[in-house]
Length: 342
Image 1 (cartoon, rainbow, N blue to C red):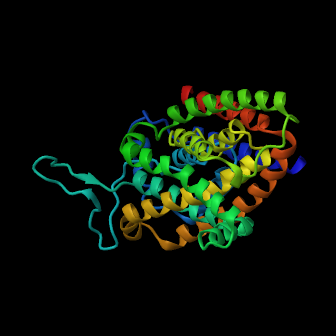
Image 2: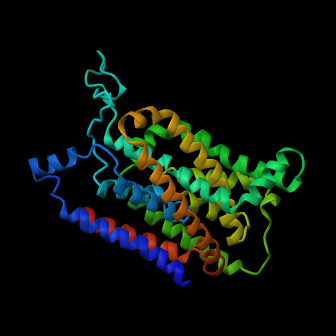
Image 3: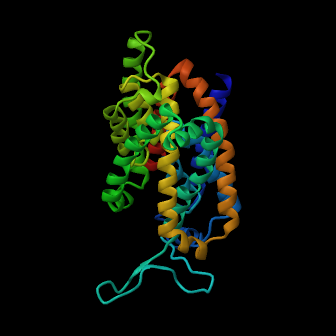
């Protein structure tokens, strides 16, 4: 319990530091000085990598939204700017080169690099789950080889829960990137997610002790798809993939422990797919625009911090439920609103 509050306290301290740093920067409307500050950020350094790796690792599997936190920290670190980046040869990098229809073209910017970096360092969080849940992963692999029936059923359930994210992700990727990657949508999602968690936690406590709940391989196809559909809601940054899948587990009758475990294993597939897709789509630009060192550091820091967060999360959720995470989300949303207003 004490460690859990310490972990959340560290996140809160980072958030407080963010507000202090952001308030120390010139006002965006203050003229040439602020413009000079925002346009000088053209790379992700090692200090940025440590901060973003820590934020990613600690928040990825907690129901408080890693993407939402990374968006906020990108803003504070000065990475969320539209500064065009150049390749190693000094030439501009183009997502879409200038043409008669679009004379200005579509340059690859610092914001594009930061958004891609935030997805790719999820590889560290993936590694943490592989190490911590290797027995479950091995069971699934054995199941696909016809040697473990329970593992085969678990693998089926994970695939069914993953498929909705593939469909909706491909359909709405551009709209999500264009309209939802910003502080205001994140705040709305933080508040909405907190209220949802409070509701399902009250429902779970009323039903506690009625039945032990199924194991992960006992879920039906409909139950697995239900969790997968709820995971799609987390495409809205600030919602939290972990929150939606744990809530989904609650709704289909899983215990907090098994809900968290299914969420972590489903995240292993979802995050791997998202990281691989982003790497294929923007990897060549990142290789040209950014150094490999900070990317590696971010992944290592994310792996170590994610392992600690997952171990703590399992114990805490079993004993206390989701309540504290709902409170944290409301506090964070309030802090961001104050910052935005001021």
